[in-house]
Length: 327
Image: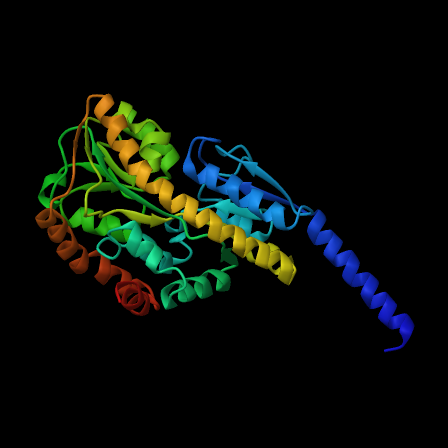
């Protein structure tokens, strides 16, 4: 290449880098600004990225203010029309059934176990699947949750018979159906009106969402906390693969460092989120309890016969992912 060609190539590289830096990265999600930990952790992530590269511009759109429904965020990121979202991966199972693994009952019963998977072969395989489907998982945010119901307290599988439940994933729903419950699929932002109207008599969701969406106003019983968590979900910051690929190596490094800091913050906050849920339900007059070991073991035994079997039958990577997450 002659000197003219080299100068043109260098100029083009500078223009490309400037375009990436100048691009506004939109972050969409469904929760309240500055109250829900998912929003606060996203703001911390942005702050940490900008400490490392002030030229990258972000704008956060909480509470669906960008006009994109929670489930539709995946399509927007795959199309490249949305750069980032806080996205419960279970919302994508209609298109990416592998993602049921991040809510699979009986696989992760604590935040310590969830965070131990960071940097593991499981995380690497999950990222490989995500990128093959047009998105990149940026953070490692896991949310513990539980049950809240209107009619009676939930303990073992026999206690949900006849209830109309929301669980957030088809494999989880298969377990509930076997236990005698009917199920409805909806994002967490729709649980409150469904409880209010009688469509639902109970729900499983994150402790964070139970408080953020004031679900204690529509329920009388909660099962949450303790040593045995049945409902645990990965709800990370996710980025369009198209947008991720446009970042320079230095910008990706800034994202990864910011993600690590946000992961630490978010995990610590989720311990408090469970306590906050217990306090909010107690203050509202609800009865709050925890799963016993015998109840949890009964749910896990049922999950292995239902959710685990269904997952492996419908997902080519199912057996491998189950093996990796339970190692």
